[in-house]
Structure formats: structure tokens, C-alpha cells
Length: 454
Image (cartoon, rainbow, N blue to C red; front, side, top):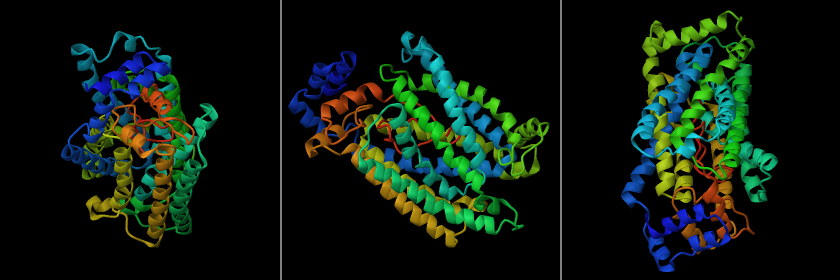
């Protein structure tokens, strides 16, 4: 570790005003030298950012394609299969770490498991709503609706954590909401006018927009925001291994999600008209048969590889995001996800998606207009949540700080030392539900797995 990182570690262990001040005001010459040299090489950094954008695009498109291939009646199975596969993937990484390394300490293992249950409940609500909405929410709209996590998190933070945001941040969040509405409303209106359309096939399903599905997908951001804020409050004075935390939360998320199965009888939840009670377990087993490709149409769509591959891509995507958080900076994180947003949106209109490609129509213009508005809101929020009240020298120092130090919440009257101190103790990383950017409304690093455990 370099000298500054050692002092930051000391500040964590001895968290008081003087310790933090000594940590930040370490050897001035060393600090200047470190600011001139990024933690990793520029070519390495460029490869990481490029990989993050490409994996992110694959991640979000695979999610939509997978739910479309399985259909709305099998959506709950897809949700649970993703949860289970995440337990398997996470276990392959976690348990060797626990056996052969000291990454998971005795203190971490004795951490109260009640917190994991609460996180699992909140995350399960988010993934359940996501599975209800993804099949009939056009893929090009999903990246824009994902950005609603920012205003939702701001709302929950204000009510629960008594967080205070500036009017500029609220304006950025307002633009995100406006952009999402611009993108969504025309498609919903057009869909209701053409509800008698009898076209079939994957293409029609991929572009079909149902108002209740969009509503479910948008509302899925609320429990995710609550989960993010709960982690912020819970881990203010504790820090767990990311894989250990994710494994426990995934287990509880998988178990709790079965409680929601009876809701599938309601119209719009398991299908447009709902299901009878006896059909719910049959639909779940049909999803399993589809996963094993025992159903001919599922075999043609490659459902086994879609679902299994999506989870693998999602793990790699989030791991790379955490890597960039550790070795990059808040600016690079925000830049990567600013690129990812339009890249993913436009990817749904390309021939790369084959039969899942969305055609360019008159409503697509509203999607792109909404994208511009959302990007503007995202940029305004990121700028004022990170840069307000800092001199160029302070910002330069902060942007090169390693893991958990670059994303502190700031305002025009908060000094840099207070920001760094807050970030040191708060930023518990974990793989959760959805990524809007590595710095979201709580001001910390990614806690994401992206839609349905990914």
C-alpha cells in the first residue's frame, strides 16, 4: 500500500477529527506525486472502462432478452433461477476464500444475521417487481427507467436518513423523472390504441409495451433504494467482505421470494389475466422445463444458455465495476456509466439482437429525446453531488482516492475533510439489484447486481 492509503486505513481504525485530518494532510509531496500518477496504468484503465461498458450493455440486453424468451408466465421462475444461480456463482468464489484466506474474519462471521434477512426482503421485493415488468417493458426503456433509482434513493435518504440535498441535485433528479416520462408515455398510449393487434412472435413481444409492466418496473427502484439506504445506515461502522455479504443476502432473497408466489393469481402479476391457484406451481415447473429446454420453443431460443449466461455476465460486470471503484475514481465511474446509458439504449435497436431487435418507429424519437433529458439530469446530479464546494485542487485530490473514499456526499458548506471521513466509514460494497452509476444518490459506490439479481 502507498503512504496515503496506509494513513487512510489508520483513519478508519482511529476515527476522530484529528486522525482524519492527519490522514488527508499526509505528506504533501507524496500526495502531489500520487495525484500525478493514477492507481493503475492509463491503458489498463481504458481497457477496464471499455470492458465495463461492453459487459454492461450485454448485461442489460441479456436481461430483457431472457425474460422475453421465457414469457411472462415463466417470469417468476426466471427470477428465482437467477437468485439460485447467484448463490451458486457466489459460493464458488466465497467458500474457497473462507477456507484458504483470511478475507472473511471472525468478526464478519458473527455479524448479526437479522440485517441479512432485512436486506434479502428488500432486494426480493425489487427483483420480484422487476420480473413482473421486464417482459412487457421495451428494452430500450429499461436503462432510462433504471435511472429512477436516483430520485427514489434521494427520497428515501431524505425521509429515513435525514439526508439534505441541494436544489441542483433535486433539479437533476427531476430531469431524470421527466426524461423517463417522455420516453414511456407515448409508447403506453400507442400500445393501448393498438391493443387489438394480433401480431405474434418474439419481435412483437420485445416491442410490446404494457402500462402495468412499465409501472412494476419503475416501482422496482423503490425497494432497491430502501435496500441501499439500509446498507448505508447498517454499515456506517461495519465493513463486510463483499462476497460474504452478497451470499447471505442472496440466500434470504431466494427463500423470501417464494412468499410472493400467491400474488401471481392477480391480473398483471403472473400474466395479463392472472392465473388460477393451481396454475401457479405448474407455471413454475413449466419454467424449469423451459430452462432445461424440454419445451421445443425454448430449445429454439436457447433458454438454458440465456439464463445461465446472463448470471455469469452479471457477476463479471459487477466485479469489474467494483474493480474500477477501487482503482479508478468517482469521475471515471460516472463517465463509464454515462457512456453505458446511451450505449445500452441504442443497442436494442441494432441487428445484433436478432429477432429481439426493436424497430425504429415514431415513438423511438421520444425514447431518444427522453435519453437526452435523462443524461442531462444524470450529469447535473453527478456534478453537484460530487463537485460543489470544492476547489480544483481538492477535487483533484479526491478523484484519485482509492476504494470507498471518492464518493462522499458533499454540499457547498461541507469541507473536504468531512466528506472523506464520511466516505471512509460508509461505502459498503455489495452485489445487489441495479446499477445506475457507481455514485448514486447515497453518494457511495455500486451496490448492484442489476435487474433480477442483476
